[in-house]
Amino acid sequence: MSTIGASLRLIRAGWVLAREGVLASLPGDELSGPPKVAWRVSKALARRRATRKQRSERLAGAVERLGPSYVKLGQFLATRPDVVGKEMALDLAGLQDRMATFPRAEAVASIEASLGRPVEDLFERFGEPVAAASIAQVHEAMVTSGRVPGRVAVKIIRPGVRHRFQNDLESYFLAARLQERFIASSRRLRPVEVAETLAQTTRMEMDLRLEAAALSELAENTKDDPGFRVPAVDWERTGRDVLTLEWIDGVKMSNVEVLAAAGHDLKTLAATLIQSFLRHTLRDGFFHADMHPGNLFVEADGTIAAVDLGITGRLGKKERRYLAEILYGFIVRDYRRVAEVHFEAGYVPARHDVASFAQAIRAIGEPIHGQSAETISMARLLTLLFEVTELFDMQTRPELLLLQKTMVVVEGVARTLDPAFNMWKASEPVVGGWIRDNLGPKALLIDARDGANALLSLARQAPDLAARAERLSREIDAMAENGLRFDADTARAIGKAEARHTRWGRAALWVIAIVAFVALWHFW
Image (cartoon, rainbow, N blue to C red):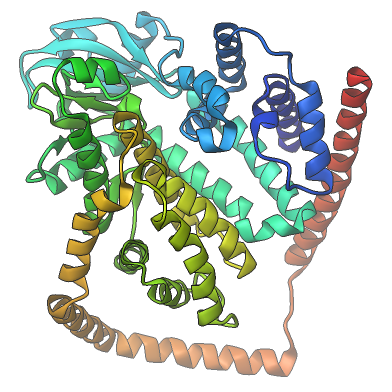
């Protein structure tokens, strides 16, 4: 029954997004087969053009009705005018600051249920909502005790949002499975793993204790960084559904005219933003992964304060090294090294030729370096890199999805501050410094120390590993002698799963055919 519900929700979402022109705005000229047909049908279904205000309000209302996960999708597309077009990006931008609020009484009930104390005992004053997003809303309040006395911001999870997200995620998983099953060329994109990444980040985002921990960790990492900070957490007034933190007085980064009128140096702000993001990513391996302009404030002294740390990303030491070497290779035009790093990381299968891949990388890097600062774009680089790596069978890396998305968003914010922003020039001090500190003699000593510790740990585990190896050897001998056997329950489960996939695959094809027929009949 959940699959039926997910199918119906997916069809409804497709209809709404097609009618409001979201699907038609996506690039589809190079598609083929059923995806091309679906894209053409979505163009036929799109409403006729209206005034920008009418179009924006209608789109915002439609996406909000679909559910919070579609609002998140719309917010991301709003940061990608290179994908959906400038007009559609402007229409979707309203989703970042025009979400409907829920009543104060419901907020009070959530606070008391989560913290187990009356709201009057927790706050001297608890006001009306001042901002609302797809998952939570924020109230202004006042406290006189605790770690953050004075004016505070209280973030509260929307009632019922977890159930709605779960329903939406079922639809996303269904779409991902159908995509993998019926569109062979998309399998390298690993749509099911991408959906799993989305589900995990969503679950973490809806536990505000984890956001509080992320704020605390990022505050420790950046305590000595110039021009960047995050608000302090009031742990006494924080729970699963409630997060209380220091109130930030500042101007949103989306209000460029107000920032300029206040005397802030917009070019310096753009450089500080990019360098802060790269510093967090490369130095700490932990970064804010939802840095759209609504989550960034500029204080009176020019410090950037980042809020809403519900979505964060992490990179291991190896991934950080690969990232730094790839970025630095493009900066200094060492395309051979960029290609070698892709092979060392396992991003490109070893059966391909490094020199040929380096040639393809050069085809990306040289045109970008030949452009003016106004047109050198990280978004463009990632798009071209994606196109080239497809030729070399590079698969999607789920652990890099948040990084890629955030890098594009941060660059977009920087360009709104400084249209002539040069991403490469701003990145070089951080990336080059990290390369020197982590790939030079100092890094060799650190790697040697880490290797010695790993060997010591392995030696301590040697008796247990020997016992496991002996058990595994006996099991392999038994398997070779008797063959691989399934018990009855396993065999039945495999049969049911295969039957279910076949049945729902056929049903999906019928649904697509019926929707296409209805759409064409409506069009003609």
